[in-house]
Length: 190
Length: 190
DNA sequence: ACCATGTCTTAAGGTACCTTAATTTTTTTC
DNA sequence: GAAAAAAATTAAGGTACCTTAAGACATGGT
Image 1: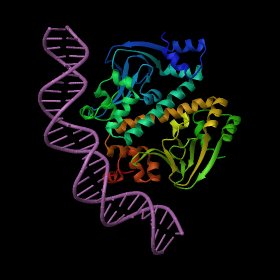
Image 2 (image 1 turned 45 degrees about the vertical axis):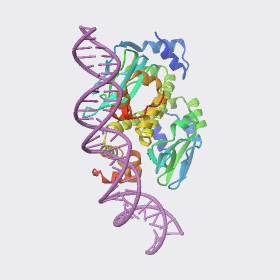
Image 3 (image 1 turned 180 degrees about the vertical axis):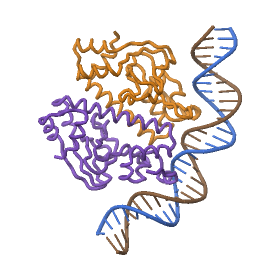
């Protein structure tokens, strides 16, 4: 099995062979073509997905049909509708592949089992949630205090690889502006 | 020692007497008057604070001197500049009391010691970070897809107690609008 | 290679929200 | 309990960003 995921985890906790193989046994691997829905709003969000290669995005569709991109996930990122995954609620978001992608999925039942069997994973997920929290909080801060142009510039500086893998339209919907308006902004050098 | 904080923790993990008293020994208690700065931007953010009574807010001040409220913390909430607390970076935010408040503080060193000594706390903080993450993500979603009026309505529904304890000006700066504009919106019934 | 579909760009007119400023109301301070 | 300070409201003029529309440019499927 691919081991980028175990490398990712080993940055934060040390696992023995037995724990590694238990972890691997709880994952399922999928390779999906471009534009495949991994999760639909209103469905049960059963999986937490690790992106091994490719790119995915989660997005919210409001009553008027407008899309807001909640997050992008490229290689080595995890993605799900976390609130609904953890609380067994119908999904609020959609998740789809942006390009051909290979992902490893951890079901909710296996997530619970993993935490029971190897409590060290509490630390791993604590750190993962910490990072996710502080990242979202910084995003809120930027949304409140920066102009659209500054937010775009900040995004390009922070995520140059994502900029290469997704469309401007998708970036605009992440920043909360229209693609037309993004198009009028001065482009920063990458 | 006040035990609202242990009650809060007991919702998620079970502690024996020894663990409880270790936890208590790692905290320090402070009672602060209204409008007291608990953290200044650029300082080292040394504490994670649990609010026993009163109300605090964290806010970011941009170059033009504009304030954006990042979060409110009333009784039973935790507050800090999480990114800077965890990563030993100079604080980005200010934190101040909105009214006379009693707080319990956990220093970074004691936080590390607690996690070492009682690994069960990894689970507690994992859940705390999870909740913080999903809350912030929902806020991002609302900022992207709702109008100012809808966000205000949602805030009032979600946090009626906070509405009673803070000014409209502070709520406006949490929502990313001016107090003048908030004042023109139709007020929902509480 | 071609057609279809979607993305990117430009531009004109519109709106949600901002700025400034003045008045009223509430809260704080001595 | 009066004076001072801060919050809340109202209103007029301004701007950042939106909507619609149309043409240029990519990209993907057969």
